[in-house]
Amino acid sequence: MPIRRLTIPGRLDQIEAACDCVEAGARDAGFDDSTSYACQLAVAEACENIVKHGYGALQPGEIRVAVTASPGELTVLLEDSGPPFNPARRPRQQPWDEDDPPVGGLGLLIIHRVMDRVSYLRRAGVNRLTMRKRVPRASG
Amino acid sequence: MEMQILEYKRAAVVTLAGRIDSSTSADLETALQTLIDKGKRNLVLDMARVEFLSSSGLRVLVNAYKACKGTGELCVAQPSERAASSLAIAGVDTLFTVYPTREAAVASF
Image: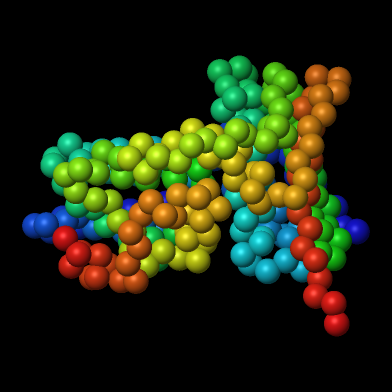
C-alpha cells in the first residue's frame, strides 16, 4: 500500500503540489481521470480552507499531506496547526434560487459530494482531516 | 491561468486556459468586472482549455452571471471535461447555458 507524503507551505499558490500528489495516488489506486480530478478538486478545497480560514491572517504554517492508495481506494490525510476547524460537518443544503444563486460554501459542498468519508480530529494542537474515496471495482 | 479577451459588437469572449483556482481567480474576477463596468453584459467564457476549476473560480463565474442577468447573459462555450465536471459537482451547471462552440455562443446574442 504505497503512501506518498508531502509538506507544503500554507499558501494558496502551493496547493497545486498537493493536487499533484493526489493525482499520483489516484493513479496508484487505479482511478480514472474523472475520479482522480474530483479527488484533486476536493483536496484543493480542503487546503484552501486551511489557508484561508485556518491560518488566515496568522503566520502561515505548513500543510502535511499523506496519500495512501490501494486498488479502488484512496485516503488523503491533511494536517495543519491552525486554529480548530472542522470541515467534516456536512454543509446545510442551501435553497437554490436561480435569480440569486448561493455562492458561499461551495468548497465544503464539493468535498462532501466527492468523498465517501470525511472525518476530523483535533489532537495536540493539530487539525487532522481524513478524506476517503472508494470506487467499487467491476466484478468479473 | 491564461486569459484572452476579444470584444465584439454584441458580446465579449473570454478565452481561459490552465488552472482557475484560489491563486488565480482574482485575475478573472477583475477582468470580468472590468467588462461588466464597461457595459459588456453578454459574455462568453470559452473554457475548452481549462484544466482545473475550483470553488474560487466558480464563485467568480456565479457572481458575474448574477451581475449580467437582466441586461445580458454570461454563458459557457465548449467546456473541457474537467471544467464541466467542476460545474456539475458544485451543482451550478444548470445555471449557465452551455454551447458546443464559441461561434454558437456568440451567435446566440
